[in-house]
Length: 259
Length: 256
Image 1 (cartoon, helix red, strand yellow):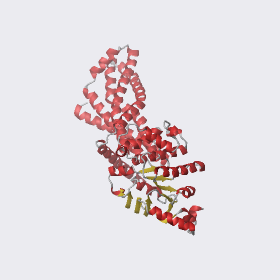
Image 2 (tube, helix red, strand yellow):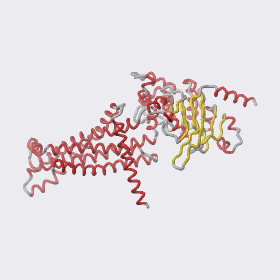
Image 3 (tube, one colour):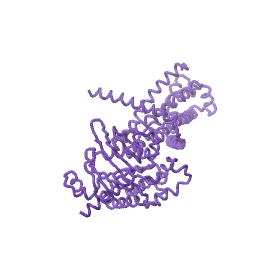
């Protein structure tokens, strides 16, 4: 009873904060395949929101719509009050400086060194940082925050999977975004490295005071990082709540995730 | 039914390629201009191809002279060798053979590189980083192939003529000055200019097809292989079509 009351108080506290991201009635189809069927989401300042769902449930499509990589068929996506579905390319690029994206496969540019990978977004977003002549302090800071300052001159191919994930996180952090999107942050990693990445995500959130949207089907990851969870089934919100609430759910579909 | 769908997909592909080319022309004149990346691509493409082009040109010159010599000798027309070889190389053999070699090397490279960037989400990451990936990756590569191929063809032609001279010198005791005097006396602007202009179109076609295949790559790692492979096949086919058009147009204006 006491635990339930605490959870409710926490949720009330979260919802009293500033709304960073809001998705309303998002729909996206590919031919006859209706991937998103009216998905809704609210992400508040400083919150860690986990979206769980089976493969093909529309998680990756949703996250790609969120950064403008895909256009939804209908619905609105508001990032800090601005509907990104109605923005032109320049305005969208400005909003993107506030969003860090950790790709499932890291997406490091393999023809560039670690330094060049981190410098790339810095050189592109001149509006936010101006025309930076010496990027070294910012690059070193971002690499330091993921504990890999010594890899600055290495190529991505010289790094392990876990290290690549950290570098990708450093690249997502270098613009000091207000929101970070994680697409399956622990997929393809061994359990020990997964734990390290989960710890890193928590540390980074405290250090940079970001709001995080985490897409995963790793229950351990969800248990540690989530403050609130949404279960996505057939492209729509199936159930919403905290991890303990969902873990104790009697619903068969929900139970299947936690088995 | 199967035949119909093959024809349909062929025309869809042509339509998509035209749309891709149209997008290139829209983006190439709009800001920001990626000069640094363009220079990097020019250097990379030139550097990767120069040795291959040189070796190909040299062998073409050697073989063409070796195989033509006996026939000309039969008619007592060996003195026509420099004229004949230079016209063949400058007008047709040089541009086409070098462009085909270039397509094999560069179109497949671009197809595989962009294809791999597509399937590993690097192109998406670039977009999220506030960069227009089409401008950064596609426009720069197409411009680089368009600029570099004519330069490489001029270099390859020169090496081919040098190869021809080596055979002429060893078999017929022709001096360097005499050989190249004959070459330059034979060649006219109507030989050089149309041949050079068509190499710009060849370069554009190779870059366009390589980028189109790579940028629109699907089906994971299998798709990367397919993109590289089809980039070479389609660009080689397009080269022959363009060559036919170029010869046809040249014939109208210069009366070959």
